[in-house]
Length: 84
Image (cartoon, rainbow, N blue to C red; front, side, top):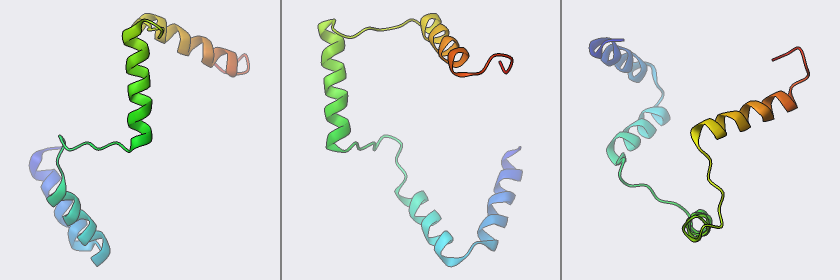
């Protein structure tokens, strides 16, 4: 899709949208800031615990290949034979 096609599609969407949708879209566009990520305290605590475990060497890390193998093995285990 080209830039102009995308603009036309957005204009069509906005023209057909109800008031609530237009207001939400406007709020999203006006307040959007990719660098403004906020986590709640529970999530921050989990991230801190994981970070501390990693730094102390108490956390197991996996290479990309190991991760892919683990996912494949998990999928094959969970899927009835003949479906994979």
